[in-house]
Image (spheres, rainbow, N blue to C red):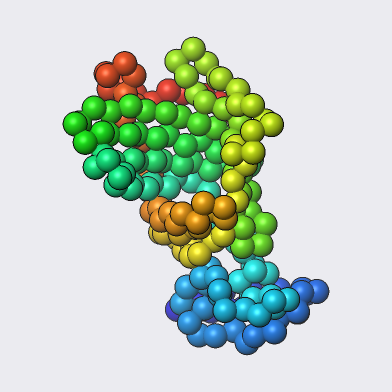
Length: 193
């Protein structure tokens, strides 16, 4: 109840200071899931979520988030993304094939939020030998996602060009994926970006 009241007061304050126009009233459904994006807006309409999305959702996205997906070949893809307040991210991937063989990959880059868009700029791979920089001219190294839902425990987002939806869960700071290097499990590689 306190959280709901705090959110309502913050929203009222922002509405009074904002130069953005809200054309739909704040609904009670949005108060229960304040970061749920309204897909039913007409062109030119701005939702109350879009006003708060950049600052509130950016703060909510800090920390570690875990996702898992079954692949078409029967294998599994896991990822653990850690977003820092300085705008950098690291994501560790673990791919397990249907036969049980595993491989890992770690990537780093920049991230941010603008309105209801979450974006990532991939800058390179973390390897045993050090950082391997990505080619900044490759268009696939820049990703934009529409935020579909966000709260303290869950984040759902849709890739703007591939139309793939992802859902991840917030996890504790000490959670990490095992890293497989040359078929051996090891601790995560360390890298400061």
